[in-house]
Structures are given as C-alpha cells and as structure tokens.
Image (cartoon, rainbow over all chains, first blue to last red; front, side, top):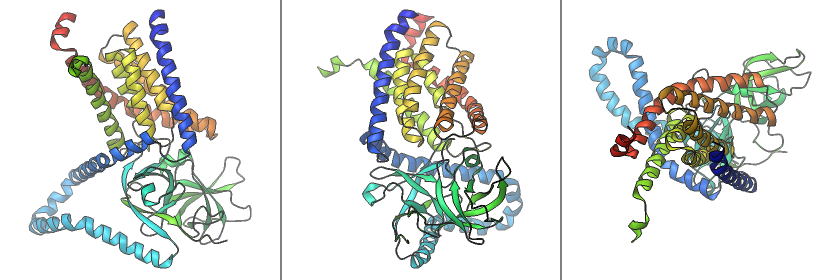
Length: 280
Length: 178
C-alpha cells in the first residue's frame, strides 16, 4: 500500500498540481476572456448543446402533455378535428411568431432607447451548478460582446451581465447570482439601494435590495430599476419587483426581496447591450 | 508501420471512457441543469469519476478525473480549477480504495460515490464561505440536498461503468479471472 502510494500517488499529485497551477495562472492572466482550450470546447459544445436542448424541450413538452392528459381527454373529442389542424399550423408558425413578437417588442424598446447598440442572442445552455446562476448564449467576442455587458429581454428587463466571453459564446451571470451587485432605485418611492445576490435566495429565485438609506421606504410591489450610478448599467432597466420587505437579523435594517421580472428559466432569446450613453 | 506502434486495446479502452465522460457531461449539463428539486440540482460527476477509478484503477481514475474536472470547470461558471484538482484526486483514491479495501460491487461503489459527492459538495461550499463570507447554514443545506439528489443518479451509473469495464476486459480475461 505504501509502495502504491509513493509510486503512483506522488507522480499523480505532482501532475495534478502542475495542471492546476497552469490553469489558475492562465485564468488569472485571461481575466474573463476564454483561453484557447476553453474557447475550442465552447465552440464545439455549441451545436451539441443546441441539439440536446431541443430534445430536452421536446421531452418537457411530452411530460407536460402527459401530466394534463386526464383534462385533455375530456375536451379531446369535441376539439379533435380543430386541434389537429391548429396544431400542425401552430407547430410551423409558433417559433417564427414568438421570435416576431420578441423582435416587435424590441423595436418598441429600441425606439425609446436609440443610444443602445443591441446584439440578439439565443440561449444555448443553462448552468447545472447550485452555487451560481448563469446561462450560455450563442454569441461572443466575434459579435462585439464584452465582459460586463448588460443582457436584457425583448421588453428591456435586465436578466444579467456577461461574465465570460469566447469567440462565439458567452456566459451570462443572472441578476439572482450570488455575486450580483447592481445599483438600483425603486420606481414608486424613489429609494436607492443595491441589488445583491445571496446564496440562499438564489436557490429560491430571488435577490435582495439592500443598502437602503435609513430614511427611505420600500413597499411590496415596487418596481426595481437600475439606477445607472457608476455607469456599469444603463439607467432605468427593469430588474424586478419587491416581493416582500424583510428585516435583517439585528432587526434594524430593512431590505426588499426582489423577484426578477423575467422568468430566468424560460428565457429563449436575449439581447446584449453592446454600448449605450452614460448619463452623468 | 504506424499500426504496430499502437496498442489498439488501450486506445479502444481510452476511447470508450472518453465517450462515457462525454455522455455523463452532456447528461449533467443538458438534462440535470433543468431539473431542480427544492431549488437544488443533482451533481453526479464525482460518482462517475469514482466509478472509473474503481473499475480501471487509481492511475486511470486520476487521468479520467483530471479531464472530467477540466471540462466540468468549464461548464460550472463559479470554478476555475476546483474540479480539475479534486476529481483527479477522487479518481485516484477511488482506485486506491478498490485495490486495497473495497470490492467492486454495488454497495461499496455507492459508499465511495457518497464520499466523493460529499467531498465535492463541501469543497464547492468552501469557496462562498471563505471568499464571500456567506453563512454556512444555508450552504450546508444546499450541499446536503445536492448529495441526496445525486445518489439515485449515481446508482444508475454503476451498471453502465461496470458493464463497460467488463466488456473492455474481454470475455476471455473475464473467464481467466473467474
């Protein structure tokens, strides 16, 4: 046993240490930009992720159908003929119509924000981690996407920020990620604070609106917007609504529980804000 | 000739385990990224590494773990090198345990998997606790649920890894062993 450990263990330990050091040093040097191997792997994974994602979506659809089967069966007879036609049509048109809707919403949004340079991107993968909240989009540095760029929905709701960029992919940390820090203001009361991620809340799909001035008040149902302070985000992007007002453990400080306005698990297409006018 | 230089058996073995790794990574990232129970997802990659270590030995387990960890670190945005280092060591020690202490049956595999899952969850938890000052209580709950949800999937990995290893060993060698 000792021989086994000294013969193989030391060698393997040394190799692991060397690999770890190389990766750690290169990650530090790259600072958010993907390395060659990571980039290559990301590029190779993209089409596979797309295909598997489509199969998973289909399976989810099948599951949903089976779950509601009893209810559907009762309605089925009367609707059968109409349904067959409608379904065939809907299948063909659904994806195009949805995209059309999203782009129309975006057009309205763009008319209000002429300074925004947007890049449309499809979500190709979602993080399997319990310790962060992120997704991967199918656009990267080749499309002008940079680390820190805000990512919004077609209606202008902030979903996250770009954390890492490869040539044709990028990882986006969502607004509920534990590392989130966004300057925010509430639309009704005008209170300013900071949206912060929290490991426990992330699991439940929430973030915190905290660091509120002592004289400010927030109310349930308040819409939370980006404040634009510091220039990291454009001003006025909707992030979410105050779901409830809570008190920190000491009982002195209030914070708001923020429910994101976008359904982060159902996002299909997002828009990266590549540039915008910073208002001082 | 080039073909004489290549040990086809070893190449076939490496390719089979590479395919197994790809399948496990795809299932983890594509399917289990969408399934949450009480807000927590299963994370069974450590069990897949332990299976390889147990059936292929410590060195192969470490090499497999190193690659699996490298790709896992790419998929999990919060890590840089954690899985690369950890999975290589888990693969090695699973092989070491199977060579000296454990037989390669289902329950010993489940015990090794449980240890691998626990160690991984604890290391994942340490980052937020040390670097972000997060409270350990809620993180422990997440880690516990992660391990719990991963166990049934880990059980499904055992027959796959076992039958693959036996097939690769070949029928004749199996007979010799018997």
